[in-house]
Length: 498
Image 1 (cartoon, rainbow, N blue to C red):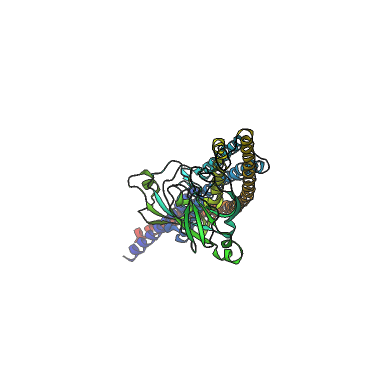
Image 2: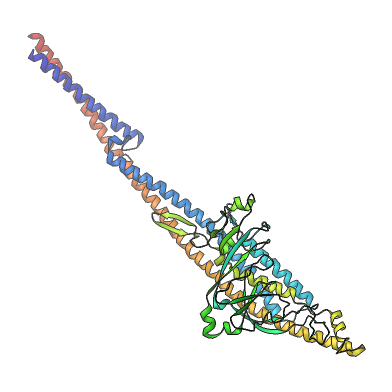
């Protein structure tokens, strides 16, 4: 009985060792065939955990590299738009203004200038509405909203807009006071004939972004605002300090000289001026992109409401914290966008519009009006004397118009240079961020190679070592068979002899 038990135990042990050797052979063969150190996590949990970590890092690295490519594409398109604005459009604007400021232009030449400036202004608006993959580049996080209105919004779309002005935003210039030729003044010796006579006033002006019937009366902190027409007497010459004239036709705020000079003027700035605006036109700035604004009303059912998702009435819209950031590593983010209000400011667009309006609206007095005035009491001129007086008036008037206009053009040249510096600063900032992304891209590409090498080192089969272990397992298996067969034969013979 004891012999039988011993024989059974030896047989089981022999089979156990054979199975172990076969299992090791199968494992090493599988490693060689697959090229991987493990094929199921239970083979080596530590290697499996490290493999999962490496794979996760590689996938994250690939996503970061895609983010870099997307961000670089966004920034390259932005830079191209800004380069077009600065290197082409603003240079052209400056050339036209420089020509106008140094030559006395005829009415026809000024009309040509206005058309050219208008075309350049529209082209700047087109560049500011540039898109990348259907998203507006310069609108912050509101990438579905154009910085410049491309189509006429509904007339009852309205905002309460807040604009910030610094002391240097005050334009010190001369303005032409345009009187209404049909206004009757009992104290006027010309018996109601008031020619379109330009009167020089040194004025200090802030220019709001909008003008027209859709603009509400502005609120200027610390000042009383009086609404005026450009044809009213003293519209451009506030008599009392602390009073600001709001010119309805132009959207200009005219300050008394005492309010913008010395310590008094410096104390009033910077200031936030608030006004309501509706009846927007094509080419107007979008308040949701350019200003701190409160949406007062957006018509239900209109495409703007649904497309822009502006929210219900009295929604406050701010351009603060509108950086479009992409992630390029753990806790590594870089803003990729440039805001319209910083790149091509509302003040640049407004200055260009006011220059265009100024040139369009300043016209010499109609000759028929002059003839009627100078042929009536108290002048009562006739014949050659009348013609000479009219010619003298027209000559003096054109000289004054050209002088004031050249002063305005020279002012605009300085403003264009200042606005160009703002845009170039944004281009420089954009370039520095682009260079940072290129360095990040180089680092990510290097990390990708390192991660793949570490992953392969962690998972790949050591062919020489595994081949050696396979040969060893094979030898163990053969030995187990030979030794086991020898032992079984001897033990069985002994058993039979008993």
